Image 1 (cartoon, rainbow, N blue to C red):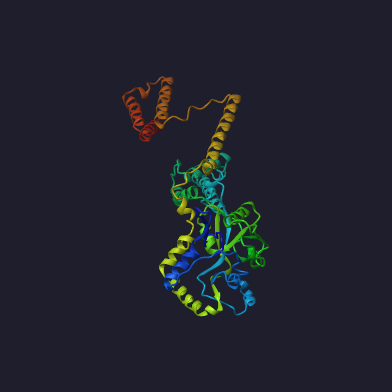
Image 2: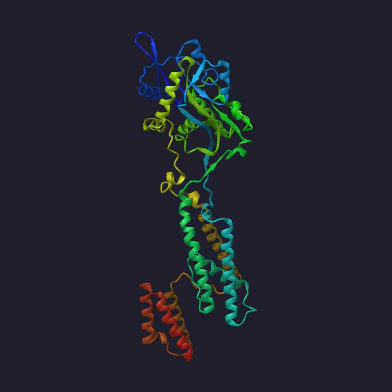
Length: 470
């Protein structure tokens, strides 16, 4: 075994004794497989420390006699077996994995106009066009019902009809649909409002509370051709150079965990767009960095198999070891070990699983709503100032306060009618029993939120008076 740690395959520690000597200790996947194998086959073993390249010169400890068994990584460089000829026997692989690709993932910034994201731009345009047509139809029906179609389309009439159409979409309908053609149009408008509001509301919460991620880097073999790849193994340079535009790698002398951080940083600062390593190492690392890394399922290169190599004189033992490895691969203990160390069988949670009902709605998400509301309020103030200036300049009488309730406006109307009657030398109808009772009833209804009923009754009385010639 090499006296170093290669996570997640094995970890190494030099344990020093009181007399100054030290011993080598290994832990992880490979030592655990050897231990399971020894229990399965009934042999004893010990690990010895020796530096060697498990790909390019795995046979060195065998030739030198430093070890009886070595780990060998079988890849596209299996041709190097010709160097040692028939002197080496290799077992059934106890580990198989493809080189998978990791790319950078960043969370999207929440813009001011995110409240419009539940619908596509084309759908918003379709809704706006439909409301515009409803507004024009309201104007047209008004002209047809009055018999004055030619003078019905005026700027003020068009503005009012479109106001009523948009108010209906926003749930504040106050237009009186008195004709049957108008009521038919209202049915179509309310059906549209029902579908639009229901669909928009259903999608709005998900867009506000679920973060959206941007995945950077290649998504398939075609886009990989223009990307720079990173690998922690210099020996893999030739395996990836034909698939990517360039391949970079850290200093070979760096510890394994620092090599991984080097490639991770290369993705962050843009020196590389994709990071290759075998699936076991990638998945174990990915599960710790789900927030900023993503696996590309469409890219898988350079399959790697890891087995044991012995001197050819131990061919019979190698054959028995292969049979034992095949049996172990089908047992729960080794599957549990792979899940614990490599994270196989586990994946990063999706954005919905991670963030549903946990991400509060921020000001940035609803900033557009505040901007629109504030802009309309500012526009209302500017129009009001302009109207006030015009009336002051022309001497036009300023209208009464329009914020009064319907009951208050009705009582004001009744008093004005009474004043008009008195100016004509007639007793004010508002001062007799019926008028006083009506004023009192409208006030009571207004206080009890029944202003509309009082207003309707008062208007009916006024209408009867007008019809009777009083």
